[in-house]
Structures are given as C-alpha cells and as structure tokens.
Image (cartoon, one colour):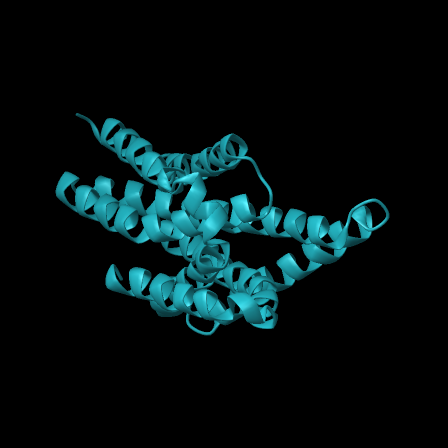
Length: 238
C-alpha cells in the first residue's frame, strides 16, 4: 500500500478506538456516576501532566505555557458566552452541562488534530514508524476517550448522540493527517501548538468538574477513587 492508504487505515482504526466509551454498560454509568466523573478528572489531569504538557514544552519551550493559557482562556470565554446566552431559559445544571459538552468536544478536536498530523508524519518516514506511532496514539487515547464518553453521558447527552459527537470529532484527526500529507503545514509547528492548546482546555474542564465533586460529601470517596484510577490508567500507557 502507498503512504496515503496506510495513513487512511490508521486514522480509521484510531477513530474506532475513540468510540471505546460506548462499551461501558449503561447500568454502570447510572450507578457509578461519581466514580466515572472522578475517572475523567484523573485521566484528563494525567494526560496533561504525562503526555500533552511535556510534549508541547519540549517542542515549544516557554511558548507552550502561553498557548495552553490561551486554550484555558478560550474555554473560560466559552463558558461566559454560553452562560449569558442560555441564562434566561436554562437551569444552572443544564447550562453547565452544555458548556462542558462544547468545551470537551473542542478540546478533543484539537487533540485529535495533532494526533492525525503525528500519524501522517510518521508514515511519511516509514511504515514501521507509522504503525508504531499509531499504536502509541491509540493506547494513549482509549482511557481519555472513555472519560470523554462518561462526561458527555453525565451531561445528559443520549448514548447515540454522545457516540455520534465523538465520532464527528474524530474527523479532525483525518483533517490533521490530510494537512500534513498535503504539505500545507509543518508538523513541528501546528501539531505542537494544537497539543499545547488542548492541554490548557483540559485543565479548564477539570476546573469545571472538580468543585462539584469535592462539595458532594456523599460521593466524595468514589470520586477520589475514580481520580486515582483514571490517572493511573493514563500513566500506565504514557
């Protein structure tokens, strides 16, 4: 197969792996909501600490912090705009869920864009390197995508819509790969910036999720357990 065919196949497999959250039984989502939300917090924090931030810092230096800060500010602005727009006719909980949904999908899109660029760039070098990079991306991505699915479901999105949203967001990996193969952008600039911004948006999402979990005394312990398990899962594959 040619390079383009290998990249297309890798992106499809990566996209299917991104729907891993759909394998979680609905009864577990309902019964262990606090545990799964804690898992999401731990997974996102670990992804920033062990994956996104070190990679962005190594490539961009101090500029990584600036781009991450920009991502955080962008999500805060989104929270403000959505909150103002829906304040008149949305309950606070529903409004927060809407903001979380937009923030999460936007962050995931940026992350996937960078992954797609990395996969394509690796296959341009060699098929062996491309396969290794694809495997690494998938292994890192599965715990995060499970966390994303749990968050979307906890935010009130039906199962079909949650999977459709995550599937649509996976298309940005194909866009990143296409941009790289077309030679429109250099991987060492656009992909690294996307990763840095994604790190900032992940932090913003954690800041939105953590306070309610801490305040809920009845579910504080399972949430803490979820944080530990989520962080350990991402650390184990980092």
